[in-house]
Length: 186
Image 1 (cartoon, rainbow, N blue to C red):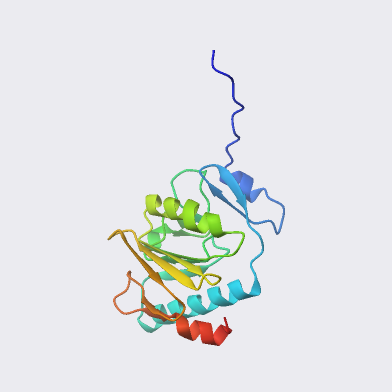
Image 2 (image 1 turned 45 degrees about the horizontal axis):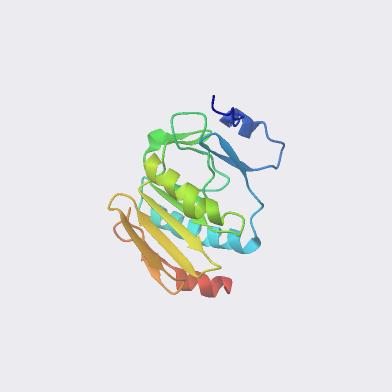
């Protein structure tokens, strides 16, 4: 007879909503991943990128919406996946509810922190790809790298904070990371 193994507990979105006030976590395939508070540098990078995308959408009368964490994204039609990407761009208004985004955003940007490195590079990369996210950027200030994954064309590009990077979901949106680097002194 094979040895018996203890069954791992699967958590749901209800468990996320039951966390104490101020405690943040994400839920991927029923597993809870607690989140450390972001650093000031992290928040400044998120703010600059968010402002560029929001200005682009507003200037071009775009139909997409850009949201900044904490913003709930329910990736699948189940109760075992809940993430809070640093930046989410959603172009289908039917996915937006008062609670957040139901389904995959078109474009997700994560800013890597020491505590989120494994999640951003591995767990979320796989989850976002399989959930239907069109484009995923990993911005890693410590490594001076921006990794751009275009899941539709299965293309991956590697950039630095000296580059201007085109967003694939738009025809003419570029984010100049050298400007962000100068502005934030990173």
